Image (tube, rainbow, N blue to C red; front, side, top):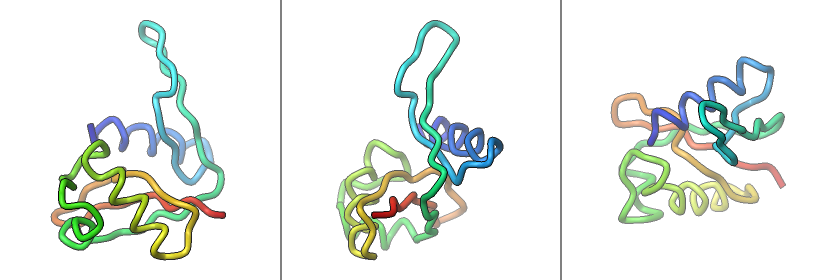
Length: 97
């Protein structure tokens, strides 16, 4: 799952957005994604992110609630991810208020 999140994020970044998420719709070989022009990408260790949800593993399904709670702890509206993995670190997307 993280590979899909990474591909979507990188695609949106290539269009000038900060990142993106989805797919929000699919039809055959076509996907619709949402690109975010403003957001903050934060790198955090997977161990630290697990403090926000013990079910968190390095994929968007298991870490979605942990990413949301982590970003809220930083004062953001919420978050999603992870969108990238680098060794024991992951990147999550924090959404601005």
